[in-house]
Every structure is written in C-alpha cells, then in structure tokens.
Length: 312
Image (cartoon, rainbow, N blue to C red; front, side):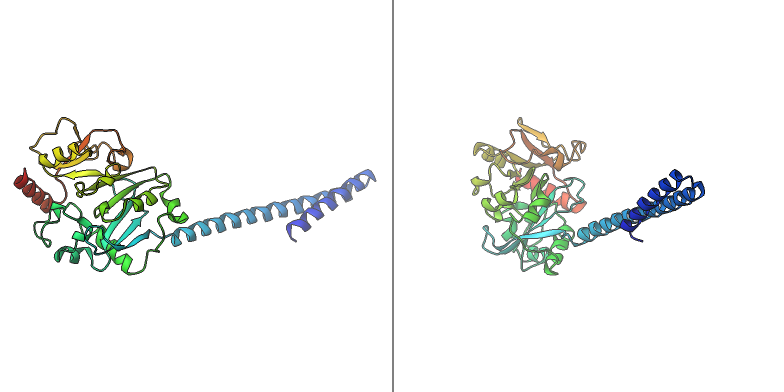
C-alpha cells in the first residue's frame, strides 16, 4: 500500500474499533486497534524510507553539482595592453594558497605559449610589462612566482578546455565572487587589461589585492593597485605621484617612515592572510605603505637579493 492507502486504512480501522467498542464487541475492537497500529507502523516506515531517499537524492544532487562546477573561468581573451600580444585572463575560484587565504585567484597568461616558454623567449612582457623581476629570457629571474606550479597548471587546463568562457558579469561567476576577495594578477600585471574589466570582475567582491609595476603609465589603477617598488627612488617617485606602495626590500634596509611590514610575511610573523588583511588595494585603503623582504624559493630569493643589491 502507498502512503494515502495506509492513511485511509488507519482511519477505517479506528472508526471500526470505536464502533465495535460502542457495541460491546471488545475482541473485535482490539483486533481493529491492532490493525490500526500495524498500519501506523507501516506508514511510519514508509515516511522514514521516503525521508532517507530525499536526503540521499539531495546529497547526490549536491555532489553532482559540485563535480560539475568549474574550478575556473576564462574572463578575457585578446590583446595585451602592455605590448599587444595575445593573452588570457583566468579566474580560479577554488584556492588553497596558505598566504593569501580563500581568495579568487586571477592568472594573466600568454594565450599561445606556456608560462615557461613565454619567459624563455621574452614574450612574458605581454603579461608582466617592465617588471625587473622577469629577468632576461628567463635568466636572472627573481620573481617569487613558481611558473612550473600554478601558472603552468592553469595554462594546461586552459588548453585542455577545462574552463568555460564567460563575461566577468556572468551571474554564475559573480556568485563565486560574492562576499570574497579577489587577487588581481596572481601571476601577471593587472595593467595588461583595462580598468573597466577589473571593475566588472569586482562588482560583487568583498575586496581585492593588486600590484603593478606599470604605475608610471597607469594612473587609473591608483585606487585599485599598489605601486610595486624595488628601490627607494621608486618609493619616493610613486608616493609623490599619489600612489600607495608595496616595496620589496633587502632585510638589511630599514622600513621607511610611512611603511609597515606586510602582516602576512615571514618577518611579521605571518600574523594574518591577505584575505583577512585587505590592505593592498591601492588608495582605496587609507593605510600606510607596505614592504616585504625579498622572498620565494632559495634560488629565487637569492636572485632577488642580488637584483635589489644592484639597484639600491
């Protein structure tokens, strides 16, 4: 019997039990009551099984939706504003970066070359501009980003067709951004694309971090990005031009008067994550300038120290 039939049987049994009791037919009344109890137990078991089925189906639906949800989205494919080369901007919405926390990560990559190959032939200028940490065709590179990890994995997934292409204002993408912070240029300089593009990406975000070495030519990014500085001269020029700065320094060099050590850095005791801190958002944050000791892997950190020693 289905649930409706069981309910009808319980109603009928209760009515017959009441009538039998009224007629003085006690044995018949007890039999109808036992039958009503059996039907009630069957109804309870039916409802319990139905509930378990609903819960199981809900869990399956959630797991299926989670499995189908893309890890990232292609938000832009087109010419770089830095040199006109073909680039792609990919947002990774699931991050496990311990320093930055649960931020949406954006990778700015050459669309036609792997990050490793782009560096070897100098075409990383399309995404990094005049950043001194690029090195020359991969030699003397002092950038802390390990190209063989995040950037290469994202590029391979891009070429494998794992990321859908959507507009930055796409509702599904924006739902993954809502209430979270976005890291502009996990690899690559935000200046490779337009300010309007980033405005669209950030419309539902709770905040962001951004850094640019193109601060001399992109004043429109002042209230979006920190001016990336490597020398005291950079620092003085950028602050004079109205920028907040993020300076990579040698451990032997002191902090400037209006600087603080990056709260997520080793030297500051890793007191927080970039996600929780939120200071590196250009002049949109009324805060001091930030500095960090040259960091990265052993080889990269040593290269950064050599570069900084040469220019400071």
